[in-house]
Image 1 (cartoon, rainbow, N blue to C red):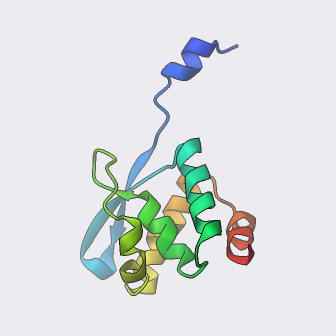
Image 2 (image 1 turned 90 degrees about the vertical axis):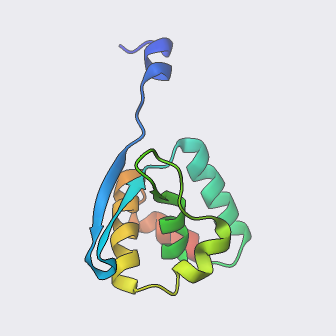
Length: 110
Protein backbone atom coordinates (compact mmCIF):
# COMPACT_ATOMS: atom_id res chain seq x y z
CA UNK A 1 0.00 0.00 0.00
CA UNK A 2 1.26 3.50 -0.85
CA UNK A 3 2.22 5.79 1.96
CA UNK A 4 1.35 9.47 2.20
CA UNK A 5 4.96 10.36 1.38
CA UNK A 6 5.05 8.10 -1.67
CA UNK A 7 1.84 9.60 -3.04
CA UNK A 8 2.97 13.19 -2.51
CA UNK A 9 6.36 12.49 -4.14
CA UNK A 10 4.85 11.04 -7.33
CA UNK A 11 5.31 13.26 -10.37
CA UNK A 12 2.16 12.27 -12.23
CA UNK A 13 1.58 15.18 -14.62
CA UNK A 14 1.57 14.00 -18.22
CA UNK A 15 2.69 15.98 -21.26
CA UNK A 16 2.26 14.61 -24.76
CA UNK A 17 3.08 16.01 -28.16
CA UNK A 18 0.24 16.13 -30.68
CA UNK A 19 0.76 16.71 -34.38
CA UNK A 20 -1.53 19.36 -35.85
CA UNK A 21 -1.17 18.99 -39.63
CA UNK A 22 -3.64 21.83 -40.23
CA UNK A 23 -1.11 24.18 -38.59
CA UNK A 24 2.01 22.51 -40.03
CA UNK A 25 3.50 21.44 -36.71
CA UNK A 26 2.79 20.07 -33.29
CA UNK A 27 1.88 21.25 -29.80
CA UNK A 28 2.25 19.82 -26.32
CA UNK A 29 -0.80 18.97 -24.26
CA UNK A 30 -0.64 18.54 -20.50
CA UNK A 31 -2.96 16.92 -18.02
CA UNK A 32 -4.66 19.14 -15.44
CA UNK A 33 -3.96 18.70 -11.77
CA UNK A 34 -6.96 18.26 -9.53
CA UNK A 35 -6.72 21.93 -8.53
CA UNK A 36 -6.42 23.06 -12.17
CA UNK A 37 -9.46 21.03 -13.14
CA UNK A 38 -11.53 22.46 -10.27
CA UNK A 39 -10.47 25.98 -11.28
CA UNK A 40 -11.26 25.29 -14.93
CA UNK A 41 -14.74 23.99 -14.10
CA UNK A 42 -15.42 26.88 -11.71
CA UNK A 43 -14.38 29.47 -14.32
CA UNK A 44 -16.26 27.74 -17.10
CA UNK A 45 -19.47 27.53 -15.08
CA UNK A 46 -19.26 31.20 -14.08
CA UNK A 47 -18.75 32.47 -17.63
CA UNK A 48 -20.27 32.19 -21.07
CA UNK A 49 -20.40 28.50 -22.01
CA UNK A 50 -19.37 29.16 -25.62
CA UNK A 51 -16.10 27.77 -26.93
CA UNK A 52 -15.90 24.72 -24.67
CA UNK A 53 -13.36 23.07 -26.97
CA UNK A 54 -11.23 26.21 -27.13
CA UNK A 55 -11.43 26.60 -23.33
CA UNK A 56 -10.16 23.08 -22.75
CA UNK A 57 -7.50 23.50 -25.45
CA UNK A 58 -6.32 26.74 -23.84
CA UNK A 59 -6.22 25.12 -20.41
CA UNK A 60 -3.99 22.27 -21.62
CA UNK A 61 -1.79 23.50 -24.50
CA UNK A 62 1.72 24.07 -23.21
CA UNK A 63 5.38 24.18 -24.09
CA UNK A 64 7.68 21.19 -23.58
CA UNK A 65 8.17 22.19 -19.92
CA UNK A 66 4.44 22.40 -19.17
CA UNK A 67 4.04 26.21 -19.21
CA UNK A 68 0.66 27.10 -20.69
CA UNK A 69 0.70 28.88 -24.06
CA UNK A 70 -2.73 30.51 -23.81
CA UNK A 71 -4.64 32.61 -21.30
CA UNK A 72 -8.35 33.23 -20.79
CA UNK A 73 -7.94 36.24 -23.10
CA UNK A 74 -6.99 33.91 -25.99
CA UNK A 75 -10.08 31.69 -25.86
CA UNK A 76 -12.16 33.71 -28.31
CA UNK A 77 -9.33 33.82 -30.87
CA UNK A 78 -8.54 30.13 -30.36
CA UNK A 79 -12.23 29.38 -30.95
CA UNK A 80 -11.86 30.98 -34.40
CA UNK A 81 -9.12 28.55 -35.45
CA UNK A 82 -9.71 25.50 -37.63
CA UNK A 83 -12.19 23.21 -35.88
CA UNK A 84 -10.35 20.03 -36.82
CA UNK A 85 -7.09 21.37 -35.38
CA UNK A 86 -8.68 22.54 -32.12
CA UNK A 87 -10.54 19.25 -31.86
CA UNK A 88 -7.23 17.35 -32.03
CA UNK A 89 -6.05 19.30 -28.98
CA UNK A 90 -9.42 18.95 -27.27
CA UNK A 91 -9.49 15.18 -27.80
CA UNK A 92 -5.99 14.65 -26.37
CA UNK A 93 -6.73 16.97 -23.44
CA UNK A 94 -9.94 15.06 -22.71
CA UNK A 95 -7.95 11.84 -22.63
CA UNK A 96 -5.09 13.15 -20.49
CA UNK A 97 -7.38 14.92 -18.01
CA UNK A 98 -9.89 12.11 -17.67
CA UNK A 99 -12.79 14.19 -18.98
CA UNK A 100 -15.68 12.09 -20.25
CA UNK A 101 -18.30 13.04 -22.82
CA UNK A 102 -20.75 13.31 -19.91
CA UNK A 103 -18.42 15.77 -18.15
CA UNK A 104 -18.33 18.01 -21.22
CA UNK A 105 -22.07 17.77 -21.71
CA UNK A 106 -22.58 18.78 -18.08
CA UNK A 107 -20.22 21.75 -18.47
CA UNK A 108 -22.01 22.90 -21.62
CA UNK A 109 -25.51 22.76 -20.15
CA UNK A 110 -24.74 24.21 -16.71
